Length: 88
Length: 384
Image (cartoon, rainbow over all chains, first blue to last red):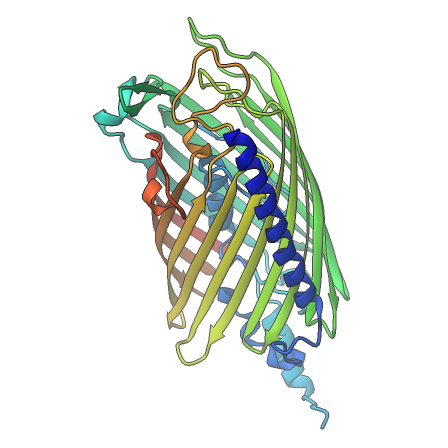
């Protein structure tokens, strides 16, 4: 019974999380979102700085991702590659 | 009034956008202008377990040495190739179960004689277009008791004068397990599992100093998903998981620093929900030195079939793995990056502590197998 209740609670949490994700994606895809300014390419110099990259240190990012994948229950990133275990 | 800019300023901007390692959305798509060769040495060390938390076996946990090599090179005007090779040597002991004597659970540990090595090779070939890029990825990973092969496709498309980027990809991994056998212990001999991954998302330049990216990743695992080295570990043979990642980068002119904020919400049909929040501050000290303090917070709930201690003879699913238990964790990090004309030197240290008290929500009984670890790395990159 406890497992069934837990399962119902998880399903509800899943649904609410899904709605939040959907709403955010729709907002993100909307070019007229008030938080977005049109920035011409020649004003994007600061965005091109190495420390502004999504992963400024790719080897450190890969190592961290592998450690957390092995030592925690959950994973998932915007990447299609990777594999292996190293799980003990 | 329409803004204009001089050809020389445009050329300067284009050069800035082609900086190696930069893959932010909405900017010119071209291979890196220089090749890059990198090496990184890391030592990963888990804390020794206190005697009070160990019922039998070793108090030692895992120590791992990692050698990482990375090569990135442009190929002509529109292609690039990235190759990474990781070599790890592992030694130590790992939990085989949790026993309950009285009210306190304690770990049943293996002996301190486990030793393994892992070799992991990954390749990524990319093609750059006027309004996007596409990549093929592939890799193999080999351990004494675990082999994996992965393939993937991913790409980006730019819109809205390259201010908006849509990204996505699919991946497939096929893994084979052949657990090391031990006298007197029954373990499976050969098992397989497969993983299908798909992700899609949007990246957006918000203004001249900030960008945001949000992606959803779906993971489908099928096959043998239990831990063959645990005495009583029976998990479902499929797992469907969804992760929502959001990353934000902001440049602060006054501080000469970049702020990184990352958040991930994860849920799966094993009943686990987790939250991960990462903060990094990339502080430029001068033109050649940058310091990067970082903090990561992680909290996960338990799997539906998680048990605080093993129940021998129980029919159905059960696992006492600390990785499926409810807990929270903090990682404190500090890195220094020194940069020259054609080289970079990186030194970093991280400390990870996990505890039931750090979890969001209350935890009845902490799993005795939670780990704390220290990670120290030294890396260098040569650009040519």
